[in-house]
Length: 517
Image (cartoon, rainbow, N blue to C red; front, side, top):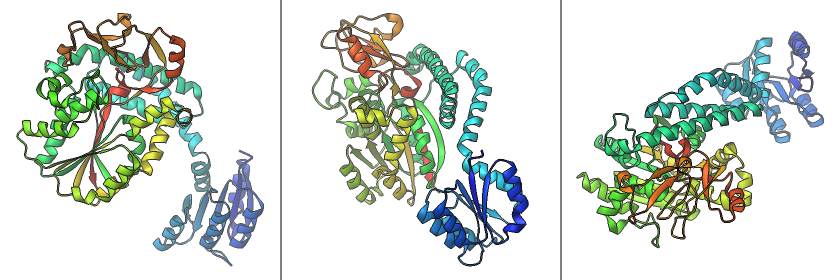
């Protein structure tokens, strides 16, 4: 505490001696001056952690001193103190990037609170987050081990994400490790819940059926369209719920979050299956049977999501809806800029889909490029990188533009991704697919207890490519590795973000409804 140095500028500084003595008694070092000019000079000559600045002083005003101080030391927090409660003065101060604003007469407790808020905020927030999680740890553990229904699992996941975000402010690495272990335990229990109930959900034999990929548009977009709303569905590929919570504060400057929900992705949690299911309103094998011209098998050449707009139109046609539709897929910066420039052309269309592939490209780039691995070294950095992209993206420009229009926005995704750490051995021939989180084929060899096995794909509405083909999925943080060059590939893919399997991060994904303020 003794290292924190304060500059206090006030022409009535003698009257504030009791306040200064109070702060010095708390271990702070306080330099006191009586004018704005002296304050500027002191900042030029010394290092300060925070400045208290009277708004009205002889010579230059507090606002003028603030401008000079910020030119020299932009990051020093400055607390403006004034006798006036005039709105224009407050606006001038706030517009000049002050850290806090106090009205005279100030009490010592107000000064101390401002100091803690500005200098110790992260430390105090970290301590509070640690204490809160420690208090909830046991109760959360009991919930995880209980027989939860689908909605209760969503609540658990939201709680884990909240604690994870809060604990980013903590310097206690031990408590973060405890949370990671509890998250892994939750993923194991969630996988059992998903595997035990998934078939019943698909067959409609369960009262606990959650919202699934192939029912998403019917259950979320159709009701809005029925109310006469113009709807924009923004599908950000591979957007996890924690990443949505990261960009939410930016979006809330422009929109009200009417519904902050989570739905369940189907298997496999990959673009080819989950996203095609969203746009078609059908499970993968149903698409393959009824719209073979729009389905590309994994072993066939060609883009696996080439016909999303065609499948979307077929879904609306099946339900007898005469809705005007548009579809745009953004794969690079230029395409995003072009769409933003022409977004006004979509304002007469009832239902507009915009697919952004950035987050998916980021996860793949993180695997392949060393620099991206370093930039997104852990979950927090991965979220930060996504936030940085979003803040300067054409997608955010589009969202801001739409905030002035009478439209409803749905933000969603097709699947999430999980950071994999534990290799699982599998043996297969050259026809087996390359995804690290799921495999299908005729001659797979693996330990049954290490995977979720589907021996009859058609029971799960998955394609059966030949008589003996089966599907297997990894759980939690596992990933498949072949015995050939096992150690090399285990190390190469460890700590990369993958999708296709069963984890809360891949399956429990956002569907957010926004209306402009």
